[in-house]
Length: 124
Image (tube, rainbow, N blue to C red):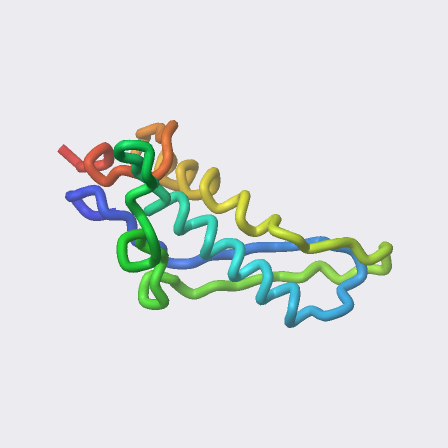
């Protein structure tokens, strides 16, 4: 994190145990896309409404995490012989809490509202 409060991710590690992996590459892809979408919500996921209308209409005015913002990314698929389970959207739910816990560990500041506002994180 820099003095202006901008957070830069250096490394993402995810592990998934969904039973016997049938298509490990598909599992990795699902976790990666879910984590990126979850981080997008944590960093940029603000929707504004004016006069009853949502102001964001598409990706030109609703920012998403871009490729250059995604760091090295490791996904570990736990191989076992349990009954195969679903993968679904589990990757989307975990990045927000992990991100704010990492910010707390680095700064001592507890973030309780998303998206993360860099103004709250400025080092003074």
